[in-house]
Length: 150
Image (cartoon, rainbow, N blue to C red; front, side):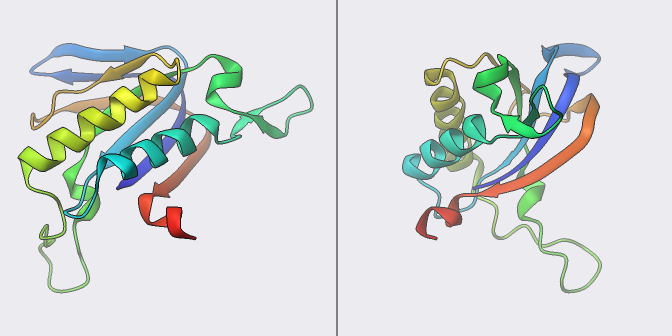
């Protein structure tokens, strides 16, 4: 799995002009799934993200996690995170999981986040979505499941 994590003051996702998910404060997650991802990967990445100390404490240091500050998550499926742009001018998406597998892992990932006590809003899997957010910091990180072996 590959997840782009963005700290946000607010965010929403719309499909055909209708808001399908929104948060006031927390993290926006762009979630990519590849062929070899498992439920274990989803659980690992979910745990990593909710415990990342990327929110500021009283002295301005990034010392608090999403759980510590009571933030929410807007989780958006994003197969293009596995677009390979090294060759030619058109991205190759061969590393992105097929929709059936990606949906299953994406849903497991969101459920793992909820098990941690976090409010999780989502986009609509497979739809053309518009995501808007007020980036906070900005703080943007990439979390990958392959790190579990490191």
